[in-house]
Image (cartoon, rainbow, N blue to C red; front, side, top):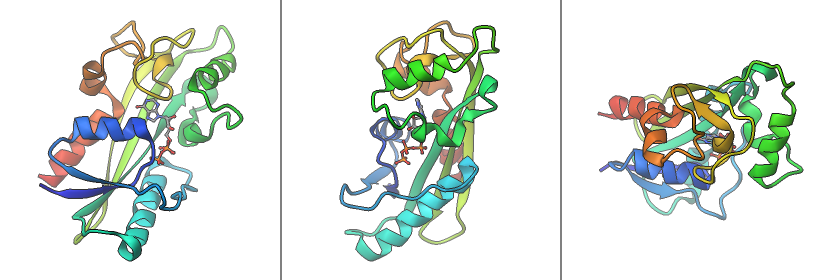
Length: 195
Ligand code: ITT
């Protein structure tokens, strides 16, 4: 079983990775480790930057050897907001800590008649202990709900309705999210590359 350092502090992502990639043994990013910078303009840049930052820190401070380092950069891209908040999804509305309020703020930015099209995007960067790094990605098309609906998932899930459904990711069971989400698709591509 590959032992992989998961360079993320997002509890929602951690839960999904353990469900989507049960054949990997994850080593979690320690609580006392530094915040990993993500200053790029694209998901791919940020995923690689986080993975490289994590590997450099782990090489010096790590407590056990790992076979690889995995980082995820993801976000919600809204058509009527020119693709925003996109790579800035984690930093949207920094004055609000509660996602119910963040989601209301985001929805309030859309004019009533606006196109509600949106997609979730996920880029994973993998750095093997030997061999070249690579990235894989996944996305899911959908639309924005009129209001925050459901308590499942995390982040923007309660305002995102995947194409072909009427319920938000916050309302749908996690196995449905895992059958079509941006992260599930990126994880399927990662699995194929690691095989
Ligand atoms: P790490 O960098 O530690 O992994 P982060 O939360 O800062 O955690 P990102 O920079 O990739 O991660 O930000 C992605 C944001 O997009 C995340 O904070 C959520 O708000 C949102 N997001 C990503 N995937 C999501 C999903 O599956 N469901 C709901 N929201 C999601």
